[in-house]
Length: 245
Image 1 (tube, rainbow, N blue to C red):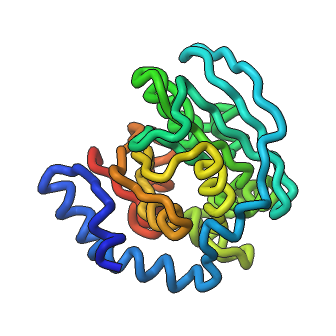
Image 2 (cartoon, rainbow, N blue to C red):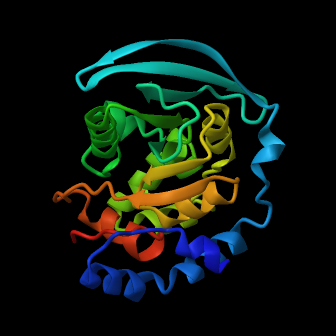
């Protein structure tokens, strides 16, 4: 357990580290909390024969040209994607973003969250390095689905935060499963990665499926008047680390 925590490299200044500990406790505590709520966590090998790349095509974007791969699987019957730039297959310490789909943020440019900005920042960062992978998981609303996310938004309009809204709907704060994403990375021959995330739960989740996280690379978006409470809730209740604010 201690080894898992030591592998999370936040690279934060001393004051940022102090704030992280004040909010979350030690990263060992974060690991324990995640495992406590995920007793059925399965090793990545259980997914070994359950995904396959169905097609690869070109994806020209304002950030450069990516290779877009679509994956079929026998677990959730959804099509998950991987955007690749360069030739990252089989290499160590490749920059990786595992991004959960957010229609309102990614496509409709919502300011209620930081998702769309994070996706664009990830594409820009990968392009600046000339190589990397973005796994795009169909896990809308932290896994609760689009309709439930809209219901949660309605509750947030009434004053509940994003965690409280899920709970009012009888749903867990975060239902995402990182097993398929981990298997996609394994299919690409990636075993040790630099993970572009602010979410310590995601770090622990991917490690639980056999991936080594050599570095956690922050991907922070400046808050606006619409998402300040959302970001504060992510920091205080969902194990997110923010070093700038």
